Length: 190
Image 1 (tube, rainbow, N blue to C red):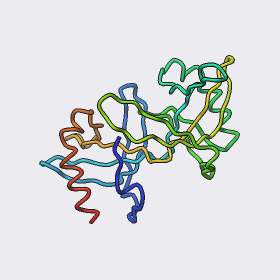
Image 2: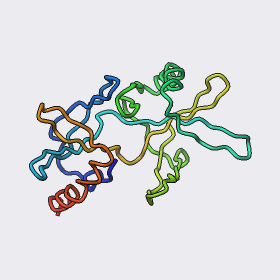
Image 3: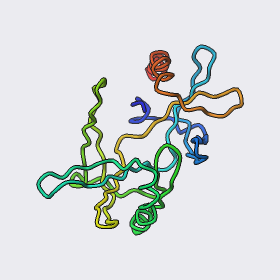
Image 4: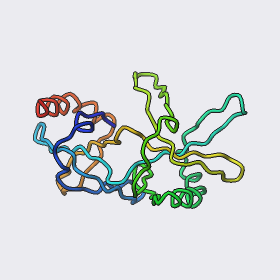
């Protein structure tokens, strides 16, 4: 994922949409925030149409509770219908989309009391803490879960294959083309 100057004050409307597909056949409809060519290859910066969400399990005792991101597909499948029901109470439709769970509908206004800061501990990277907004909590088999949405947009970089289909950049590919992409993006913003 990549933080972009387009996320904050993008005066341009998105120029269309494109669908990403993962290896399980799930899809994620995205707006094309920006497209550019570098070294004869077309790249697109994509923003999901629906809002991404993350589900955390609260683990530990009352004194030392820790939020653990639920990434296991089997657990997500098990709690999906419960999560879907509690989000429906807020007129949000939970979708099991490619690369991220998403919700369709209008998110509630951001309230400071509902914010959660996630410190990301990566060995090789100095990553900014991620700010998340609490949408709801629920229990499944005596385990407490919390559903959050990131305040910063979730962006994807993809290249357009010869077939016209978008192909998400692998971390290695992204690192290779990142300097070219950033240079071109920042030059176009100025």
